[in-house]
Length: 111
Image (cartoon, rainbow, N blue to C red; front, side, top):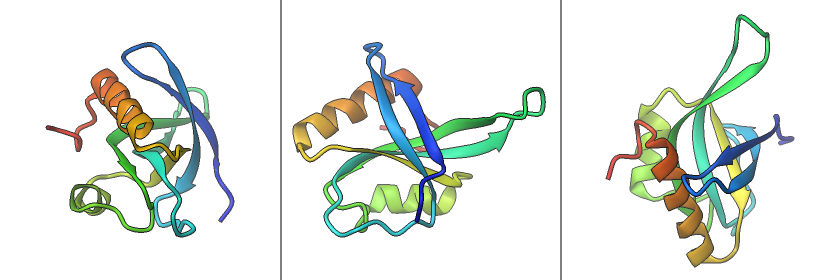
């Protein structure tokens, strides 16, 4: 499925991370390792532009097989998009996930 575009999210460190945006129902290829952000995408009435409200930040070594916490967030939040930042290195994925979580504290990402 083609992406809906891209967004850039900054972590608490100030470092920007570029994400491709897809509908939440997208099926990804096997073995796609990435940091992902579930967002609620809505159109701003004042500008007509799309806005993303992050509701969950996670990471996976295979986006086709989300862990239990991510699967619950996909079902129980108002998210309608999944934004992905491909990253094969597990340490880098975890560092990025923590950086983004510290900056945003999405409602579904409580620890």
